Image 1 (cartoon, helix red, strand yellow):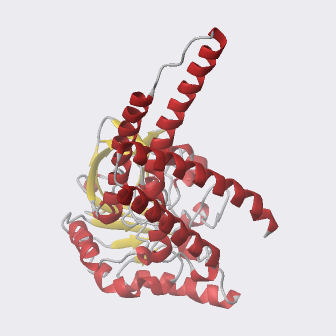
Image 2 (spheres, rainbow, N blue to C red):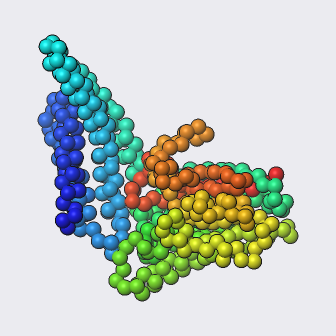
Image 3 (cartoon, rainbow, N blue to C red):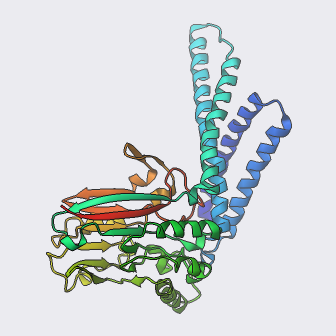
Length: 407
């Protein structure tokens, strides 16, 4: 416990400073004491709610929707305050510089009260933008499903597969869901694509198999003309919570794998299947999770056993770092890799065809969307569900549709 004392002191000091500046901005702009103190009490309630859950949190509980909501409220309340403190603290620095210059030159310091009020008004207006964005992200953004379509051309694609369509979904994270009507809407939207093939690239739960119990009837409705295939993600192994015994973890893992069959998916565990059409075929491979620096269970060599180098190959691998460090330059030539995992951090800024940014890019080189290197492609799906933060801000849940074309 002693190792947490210093960080807690620092966090407490930072919170106090942030709240002082925020309260100051409200005090300057708003005359009503009721509004000012109501806002302050609401902020205190958010902190108490979050830290009470943190202090009582046990890894054996997993990450509950209640914990996620507490995190969401904390971010929604705190990030706008960073805008306020940056502007007001910056204005304070400006004041101190003017006072220092005045003291050195023996001049008089001009009154800056009018400027302080303007800066406070500006800070509150600007802070309302991220507040609104995060509030929307929690209420509606996490259900703002987007269908993103790509058409990819390959010289070595068998002619029979020219125009073949694939729907990719990823990162369901069923343990986070709370609204069945909204999830049903997302599943219906997936089915509306009427693709030849459906591929799910991992993380069906947050931690435990029973998180999916109430959603099996919904996801079993997913349809594809030529079949549905899936792989595991890092959360499917149960590594992010404590178990009563090793056998409990093993049992849960088996139950997670069984879920795929219950909803009609063929789970590939370092395996491959040949997809045939018009007397020609392509290879579909699925590996277990392989992440840079953790849980490197995936065995690409095993999944590729008995596949020819000249075969056209589609690889499902949950973590895009696998493509970056192992797959993209592999001499065996995996033409198309499908991944997920990053969620695009569920927050960022995207202007289709022009600009894309998220803090996720500083962790993963391929973090959202389509990338090409060495004549090979990877698509990193932004995820169907959500995790940790119970919303999405600017990085919307994704349904990917890829059309294969013969070049």
